[in-house]
Image 1 (cartoon, rainbow, N blue to C red):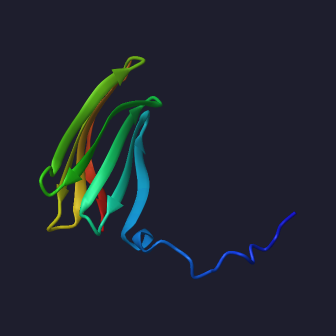
Image 2: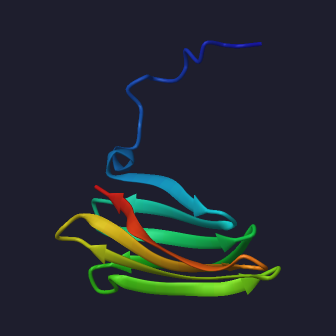
Length: 113
């Protein structure tokens, strides 16, 4: 039975929630999940291929680029993520290979803040 949540203050939230957010981007069987922390200037990423994690890492000022890759069930992928903290964005360059179809390159901006 719904309570209306009268016991929860509508002004109650963690201040850190204002400085971080998460999202994902996918191409076919490849998914890049990311969380941006604008307060600490870092981006955590996880790359899944056909539902299996093939890599993860964190982009920061001291580690602005990351290449992750692997193969699952006949699919192969390699993703390079590069953070430009001056431009406030992360770009991606990836190659995705699928059985029978072959390989395709994709490039773009993953996220801007």
